Length: 344
Image 1: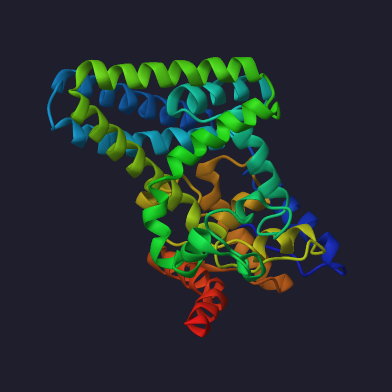
Image 2: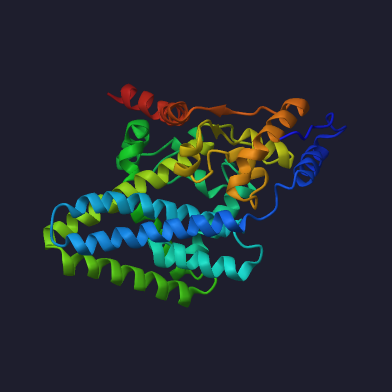
């Protein structure tokens, strides 16, 4: 990429406008229909192939290998739904929503409308203690003030949450399904009847396949392995992005609010595929509708521009990104560990 940046603007509020002009001039906001046609075809073939293998193998413990394979494919379907929600695939709303509901509700059993609303609020205020639902105090606590006063099982989890992080990810798939049902019952999702029907079709088809083809014990084992690995992989695609990064006050300008709270993950094409392009989290947050394959191309422009205007740009390796997130979780739980030691 040969585009060059200009000098810093006179006011911080205009910094993103300068970057946006550079990116538009490079043509990197344009859709990539051929890329997404290929990607959606590959993911669809893998999904169909996984279920075909399940039925061909039949009642056998070897289907647990299929469960692991389908966990990977389900995550890739979820990443496709993510791109659809951001209108990276289609420019208009209707085809994005139709395909998104097929991928999310029917494909993996998660409400597209609920997740889209939640994810939009995250993008608007990433890592904000009060406004970002992804850092709201739930099982895991990402802000020290939210950890204070937790007792019982919740307190135990918070004290040891760094060590429990990956085991808890095995429950992520279940949490997505439960949250989807709660959102539908609360009436916060557009087209609740349609989404409910799609989720019901997914659940009936999924469970029927398991318990009609496999023995009861095999079916339960398949369910546990598949959903647990799906949760771990899906969680690992999102965990490196913001966890352990600064929590803003909300007064920052758009460029700084998005860049300072995000972390990029270095890697090659395999990392791009495995993380669905979310390893370019800074660029994705600045240009959420930019097609995934363009994020690698825009990165040098963004990194150079941030250096010129004095905005910290965080990039690290994959293992180090998890290490930083776990270190942050450990530090958040420190006051509770200290209190528990004092009470002994």
